[in-house]
Length: 411
Image (cartoon, rainbow, N blue to C red; front, top):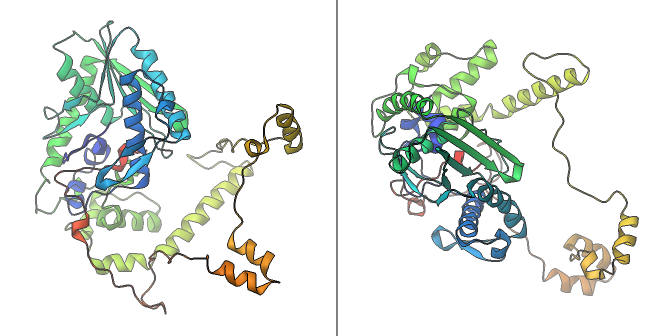
């Protein structure tokens, strides 16, 4: 699903604002941002739409450059087309014989104030079932459709919009993550969907109280959690999250609203407080690393750790079991050398080793060597390197009133 314009309580952020309404106020001071991963996902959605609308395979768009904002483009690669095709094949299969609607703008304001979204695919089935499909192109977090609040809101919007066309009895929601080879479906009755919508409406009304509000959130409206905090823009500067971490580490228990009352959150964390926390990050990260290592050690010894287990990790990349046998086989298939082997120019370091005994040649090669500047990095004030002077460039940010980019929709 894409949300090309701003929705204060976006469907993709529902896991956050429905449980932590105070986050709405905390996030308000942060600009919407994009990334190469987000642009790649946007391009993949565009390819999927074109393939489904034009009746082509995704590979037909290989090499095409998909326009992004600010004049940027993303090239459709073989990998992108291959992965998008998995989603295209799925949608074609489940929509055969039924009406397929692509990129439908859905009004969700009945359930969430001022909310809307654009569906990837909505299928009006002849068996009285409404089917909403969502493509997630990232390689990150695996997402299930069951009780997924974003999908519930899109299904509610689709039901409100298309109920006049058919008397739907059931609604099916699908999240397709081709890069993870993960397809999750969840179906429920229309009444069951609306029951969940009513609960989300209640949560949305509470969260909406903090839209454009300067009133400090009450402690009970803070609810840090893995899901709520994962894509929250204010994650690092949230006083409630900081309190939760301190309480969890020091007491070995989860923080409660009573603990948040102690810090009396007044919105975004003050810079001095952030500086103090930054000074403890290395220590906390080392502790986290030690906890992970000890948990793994005990599990590998066959001991039990409450709530945790060992599972088989993701398989590694494909490789030849014998490169010699593979070479003989491919040669026997009459593949050319430039087809069988990838050629890559040696690095400056390798060139130096080859030319170090002939200084005149090495000097000529050095003229073609360049080195990029190091990226800015955070260091303590005591670091001997001079501080970089950064000029704020507010104009470089998109106006949050016209664009929205919630990381939850990019996994």
